[in-house]
Picture (cartoon, rainbow, N blue to C red):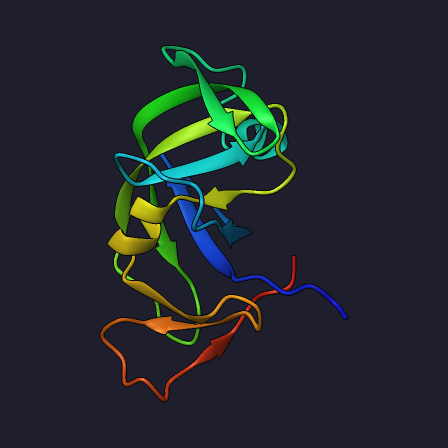
Length: 139
């Protein structure tokens, strides 16, 4: 049996740069504000690495403590599908230990994403009819 998750295509804007990436929606990533956790390769691509004026912190993750750099409200993010979500200001969180971008619970809520089935990778926007279901993006 192959494992499926909910992954969304995001447009991430930092200053004059815009990049489209696929990010994992992680319901266990509880955050007090909309956060996008990104690996260093994406931080470099967005000119955010090495981090300047970032707050260093340690997050408790399933695999143990995770050292991160937090850049409050340093990007704007939107979901890119057959329709686009509104743009949301996000805190960018950078980690050397992750290999793909992760969407926090607060960011998923701000983007109005409703997960219909995590195991099958099905989702929609909250403002859409319940039968308008999309499939996950490929990692």
